Length: 329
Image: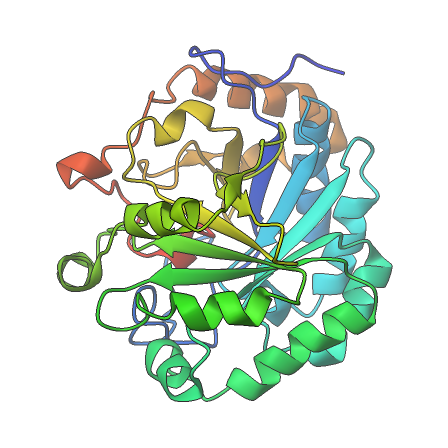
């Protein structure tokens, strides 16, 4: 194995978030309220299967053990199942995850599992179908819930469900969510609304901290789990009376970035050192031949010297990220 990817703050990177498209068919208020619009940039075609194989191989050879395939909506790629298979067959990769809006799960999740997908996150911002429709812009609640049921039927032991917390929309639905996971092996992940370049006004109107939920959980006997090396940033809580778990992702909390273990590659082949960083570093010119791997690794390692100790969200600076779909959240 080549040298483990590590930055100047001794943070090691076990986790790659790989975007394969920025296209999405939902119109979530906090991400793409006006729907997807092509970037119009030159050379903006999405990574091909061989390019995906090369970038994942390079990361695996430098200690990455988990890859999350993201979008946009990744299942919109016609070769999504082949992408899963390619990632899963890469030596050193132990977890292959995806984050999806779930609308294709009921029909396709068995194929995804057969291809090697080990973990699934589904975005469901409300258990009220009307509120779900209001937030996502799509009346697909029934289909998404059927997709979760199907995932359990084909053998997934746990599904993670992402909920973006929004004041005056869904932040008071904790009792309903807790009731839902009492007898279901679902890890419910409450994600604080994050400020991005195109969402300043929405952020000011709807941001709510996850601290109140954490305090409520602790007061009711929920216990914090220990994180694994390739886990994401969630603080995960368990309770003896619940089959499900609660995860809290609070990027505005002090020291949130200290445990950063993940890097991002966009659907057009740019390395992003942080979700809220700058323009990204071009990798695509080094994804054309297998023989370029050593150069690719060297470029990534060199760029890690530029990774900051933290994001700058507390200063109101969300970097160059226009919306969360642009580099895979």
